[in-house]
Picture 1 (tube, each protein chain N blue to C red):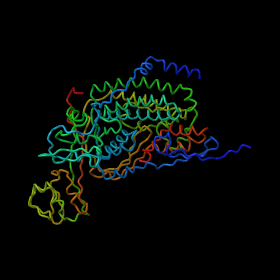
Picture 2 (picture 1 turned 180 degrees about the vertical axis):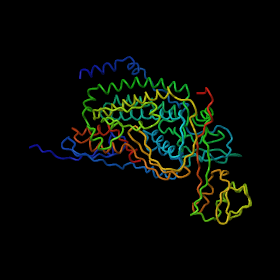
Picture 3 (picture 1 turned 90 degrees about the vertical axis):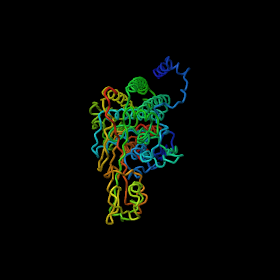
Picture 4 (picture 1 turned 60 degrees about the vertical axis):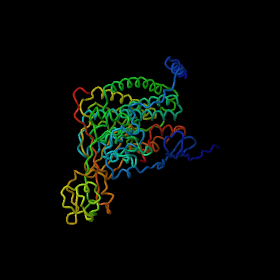
Length: 205
Length: 361
């Protein structure tokens, strides 16, 4: 018991403790520069790649909307979880959050998207809705009819003899319009994300 | 004649000492506890169901949100399991950075656990000291990753961002300061006579009982079982990791082992910063199909993910086995039995560091 009293006396008679007790002030609340906050626009022009929307893990947190002549990403703060993936996924540097943008430029890091089309042969009826709905198909072959038939070889996919055939998977932009238009849920687009970094320069670390 | 009445004393689900809702139904003979049963299920989230059908970039964030206190390890185990499935190699620099983030997370988790133990035995001064120190650890975590709790730092094939040279130096300086502070606090706990009265010899979990109950983590190491999943992790093997054990088997040992592990974590981070290899932090790589059972050491013990993914890396089947369930079971079936007072029940329960959010997911 006596040692305990002695211990407490020794603890609270330390100069550092007394100084802290008398002069302690709460530090002003400031957001540190490295804090990953809500994404904000940098002022660069949005090119409508929509990668921010595709990378976003929170449903409905970001959408790219029409503003005047162009497009802008709009953040819904109630849904955003401030993960910063949209900032990393944007190929044009439209968004910034904390210091993610400058770190990416310094270290040469980026997130690369690639898209794969998977069609469930069991469920597909060959109606061609996906081919007609696809905006890339529409640009490649404006004449494509309701059946999804096309004689143009530049289209992503077309109906041949009652079956969907994917010709140019690499042209897919991952918009998932086909998924929405499919009556059976037979087509699914996989958005594959890959972390990438350019080789590091000597002496930068 | 004195009559001894058997009483049932329910503790929880709402209790000032419990951070999360859980109910302990204690059977007592006077003040002596003769039996206890645990009742779970107050905060089921069904997070594994939400994870199904999603790619890693969405599941990663859900995995972090399984548990708020040990979020980095959930991220790490999930991503490393995906890497094992898809044969993605991790650059050495990224592997070391992962260890730094993980150990910082372990430090803050252990400090929070020790805070709640001190708070439960009514030593609030020491508890608040520890919470203050935990804030500093979380500031370091924020400086490294950009967020305090849900860091989202680890991605397949590497990490999100590098640690600049200046910040590595700052981290070293704060580690030195934190270690000095923590040494004082650990000393306060070790030498405090009142703390010893409430902790030494209370909540005994013998080594045999611990093995029988499959206890994991610091709770097992406090009972002398030298098992730690970090022994099997390649990066930790490179750092020469050896688990710490204590033979005392009581509440005191379980709290002290956490203090010891924080010191060990500080040493590991120092070693990482010292040996940090040069090179890239992201090697790239795409997630593929496969099936795996992968374990890592969370602050509370062995955390296992069972994952099955399809050809595009989307999750088909996922099961998470968290450490707390074994510890909670052992706690109410082994440690609490024979407590001399009801006041020791909460203290013993908190000393096992139960995480209900993890357990129920």
